[in-house]
Structure formats: structure tokens, C-alpha cells
Length: 116
Length: 109
Image (cartoon, rainbow over all chains, first blue to last red; front, side):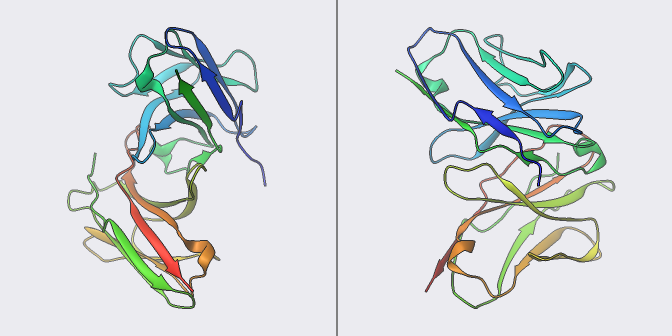
């Protein structure tokens, strides 16, 4: 079964540094998402992306965050200047037709970001 | 966006049937109901989705009454490996799918 893959599995960075989290969505999927989960808390929506632009974003997704699909296979989340409170598990997801067409999301196993 | 309410936790024993109910009183006409499962340190995994009545797949059944203001995920004969958090999501008009706090299911031997 096709999978969403995320790299790295664990990233440690110092406060103020930039990080890029990488994801390879399922190949025929057109909609891409980033979620995060702070330890012990619920899964939080960050952003959705379709047709090379952001379709929805949450209040968490402020100017320090950006997303990009640099080529036909990767989908990245960049955090420009990390803060301690950015420490979380970051999940990438993809969907064939998007949730507006009730197409389920397929999640990767996440990147654990630790900001020190 | 329709808000969902689920029990925070449930306990069960191996071999039993588990039913987890989710309330979504302000569900919209074109909203679907989707359930996900999450194991520790893993991403959520799609289980089942439905619009009305009953849907069954190899993993679970989903029961949705006529008014669609609630839904029940039914897991037949659970095993220890079904210990996880189960999320009910409702949506259809947006790509901004919101997870609630979910139901933490603990299965005992």
C-alpha cells in the first residue's frame, strides 16, 4: 500500500535556527497537509495545499512558517526561526481529492522536532 | 465547522465489541463523518467514513442515525493491538479538517 514518507524522523535544532521538514506524499494525490501534535495534546491543523498554493491555514501557521512543493514529489514545511514552543511531532498528510470531496487523509509517521 | 464530542477514554477486554459514540449536533448537509486511529508516535490512520445509515469494512462498522447528529464506531472483538486513540472528524466544505481530543481506548487482556 502506498505510504506518505517523512524525513527526518527526528530533528534537533537550536532556538532561532531554520528547519525544513520533508515529506513525500502518495504519488497520485493532489492535496497536501501539515499537522502538528505537541506531546500529550491533540493533533492540530497547520495548513492545506493544493495546486501550488495554500488553500487553508490555521492561526498557528504564522509568518515563520512556509510550505513548498519544490518538485513533483516533495512537500516541505519550513520554520524560519524556531522557538521552544515549536517542539512537537509534525505530520504530513496527502489526499487524493481533498477533504471537500470527502477523500480521506493519509498521514506519514511524523518528524519529531525538538528545539533546544 | 461541526464540532464533535467524544468520551475521553474507554476500557475494554480482548474479544469484546467496542462502540465509541461521537456527537456532532451541528453537522452540515454535505458533511461526511470520518474516523481515524492513532497509535503512540505514529500518524493518524484512516479507519472508516460514512454519510448516513451503516458502513462496514474489514476493520470496523460505522452507524449513523437518520438525523446524523451522532455516529458510532463499532470495533468487533478487539485485541490488545486496538489500544489507541480514536478520532471522529466531521467535514465536507473545507480542507481544514480539525481533530478533537479523541477517545483513548485501552484494551486489557
